Image (cartoon, rainbow, N blue to C red; front, top):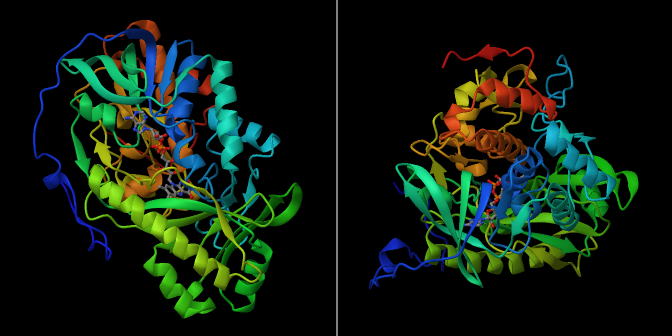
Length: 485
Ligand SMILES: Cc1cc2nc3c(=O)[nH]c(=O)nc-3n(C[C@H](O)[C@H](O)[C@H](O)COP(=O)(O)OP(=O)(O)OC[C@H]3O[C@@H](n4cnc5c(N)ncnc54)[C@H](O)[C@@H]3O)c2cc1C
């Protein structure tokens, strides 16, 4: 099913499926070399990194297949602040402050902070109905730490390699086929994890999916030669300050690390130009004279699965980057010589395929702080806050079933690809949830592979929960709502 949203922007050619199949060719079958693993994770982004680490640390021989030249995904190329390790403790002052995401993601952020690659956890000082905690990362140090931890865990990291097909018998994946500059290779594993964001592996394995087309695609830029303190002062003087947080910047504590303003109040003409290029003005930083993230968005007429349409979006996004720099030079005091230092290597998506899993979390369950008989972690953030918040600043549970791909006996899907309802997805797709999903799926995959189960559904939940508890995962002791489903 393809839904379209809005009209394509001017100059944005409407291309898609209709132009793609003008001729056909027969691709001949051939024999390819193969490697064997316990667990193969496809997609080395936000969720895949944690899945591979968890699988390998739990004793599985593990391969991580990533089609770019680095590990990290959108956490290292698109996002602004990582949402969120905590419950909404500031919006609900009667509620105890709780770090609800722990385990591997917590270890990663602690190590990143010690390396100077993250701000650590900082109280949001305005607009905290949205998120109580502000956590910003340096994208390059993030990628370096990912490599270090994968090497420590003994993961085989296959970079510049794309998962392109699967060999499947009755819903059981026998091998995934990959392509690199060397050619085609088969990876045969007991259990697979699809963390590709696009759902490529699940689709090739025959899973059912939706194409929701319900978000803009984006490219986020780093901008140097710009002063976040001057921006903050200017917003404050115009009564346009919307949110900010203080933390460690340039190695010094108590500095601005996140700021956003109401540009209508700042200057309506600039606000109009920002809107035309889909510019989100919130920014974070760990460094002086630097905005780490400014996002430009494009609403595509079709799903980002369609190559030609995505190519148009890529080109349009880069045109918008040039316009964004012109605008920032005008709008930010002292920013006359601002320039782009970093762009996302390709358009970042908020979702493409939504893979059908055994359970589909609803937004009502999320807002009602519902926990399940097969929770694999607890989570408390919603990207629509403050209009949508988990009840009483509590948490909801993320069920194991929500990652088990329906109709496939040895495949988990994680990250932005699960949860079909848009509002519910506005919670589950966030960075820190994706990290926790990774730890849960990687651990489950290692246990299922180690025990030689024919299906991932044979893994006793108690065994998984014990292991996740041992590895530091937080489970809600006093759930507000318990599901009977
Ligand atoms: C512009 C933008 C801004 C955001 N801002 C925030 C924010 O401020 N805070 C927040 O918490 N969340 C934010 N999010 C949401 C969050 O960052 C993402 O939902 C999350 O990071 C997705 O993780 P993932 O693992 O599902 O996908 P990704 O991180 O995209 O990982 C998928 C990986 O798979 C690889 N891949 C794809 N296909 C294949 C294939 N066939 N074979 C091999 N590899 C493949 C990709 O290269 C990529 O590395 C934002 C998202 C976007 C797009």
